[in-house]
Image 1: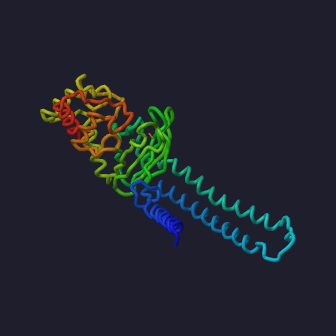
Image 2: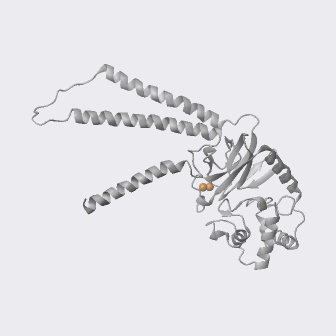
Image 3: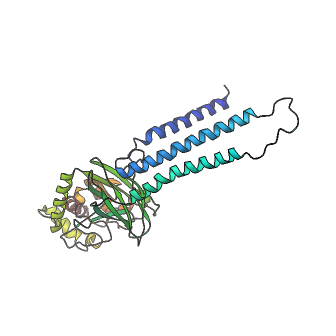
Length: 342
Ligand code: CUA
């Protein structure tokens, strides 16, 4: 085997390996529509696979027919002159018009049905208003009086009606295992719904290019057993009265947070306190979130401190300013205050 063919063989092997890996790996990725975990995603994945199978079947049939004709009717040695010229065959024309019509109809009916069923939340679904901001998500529960950010808690096994909109540019709400993408458009409310059949944490991601940190605009959907969800609602509603039992350092952090020293209150809200800013995420329960900065950092002491100190280092283009001017002690106090919010 020459150098050239050996290289080509290796490249072909690699391509096959990649294609196989992609197909096999897709169902185990954290964000994949091929592993649906709720009725909306199941409907959409079912439709995707149904049309895929039909398309693959057609592709195989057409390729096979083409190859048959190419080899069966190729010019043979010794043949001369023009082959027999045939034009028009009513039976064939009818067959290859009617079959595609039937195929298209068989795809159209389930598509239209799915389009309506996935856009119409079932009666009695819990309503969540999700608002896209550059680059984070606000989640409001109007019936429960709760506002939070970047982590959407829902009861498992229950439908959740989503009112999707945006505060600035067009974003898109996407939780691959629960539902396909729905755009979040400023000045308009798009209705969608999700349901997670099992308690778990599902990854979400903004799916519409929206600027510098589009890729850093993620969120979590935490589906909890109904009793746990009810308990969270009760606990979270109680937090509307403001933080209690702060340690001396956390109390100092609260002072900084609510004064021009830290200036956090200008953009962020903490329920039950002076901080009522509506520019950045509501931080009432930031201490109980597992991630920071819209799903890009694990929520621990060091990350929180580094994030507050220099957000742009993690999220290019963020409107949150640097707090490098604060002393280490002041930064620590603010972090302790934030961690106490749970
Ligand atoms: Cu928001 Cu991309």
